[in-house]
Image (tube, rainbow, N blue to C red):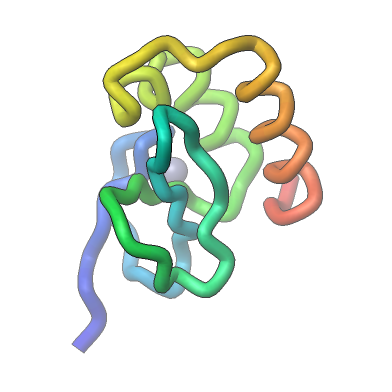
Length: 86
Ligand SMILES: [Zn+2]
């Protein structure tokens, strides 16, 4: 059975295999490549458009319950560009 997750970007649901996991640790977010890091996670489609939507909606800030610094966001975006499909 495949668990259904909600993308923090477009808010559409998708199956676990179509989304990447972001994990929250120390008020920061990073991609959880193997989907096995402990902690609360957010899910995102493997598309930069969803990443951008999540940024615009402030979804990541909501996820970490803090405002991500521009540096954290830039780092996340850098990871996203490597991992996600445009
Ligand atoms: Zn999405």
